[in-house]
Image 1: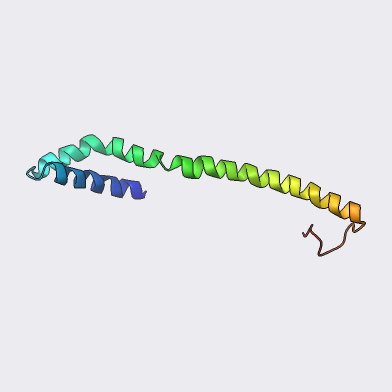
Image 2: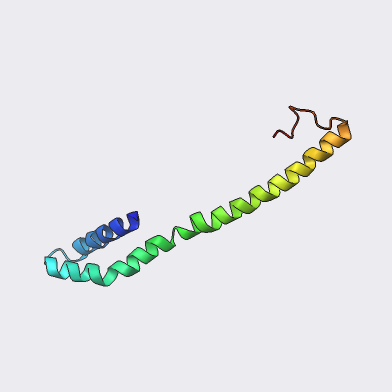
Length: 91
């Protein structure tokens, strides 16, 4: 949602810098021409951070949960502390 607000401001800022003498109608035409491309680019650059990283984080958590539980079972069985509360396998 913030991209829909910041994209027009970015386009307007670039247009003011590149064409200081352009009128309001020319600026609106520039905004209409470039808005979809700029907004899409701003949205797409966020996908790797939240999409791919979140997916990888979920996988890492699952792997850690499974391997951590197995390591905990091995520790408890090997030390004869099966079912002891306060050990590494807390509910």
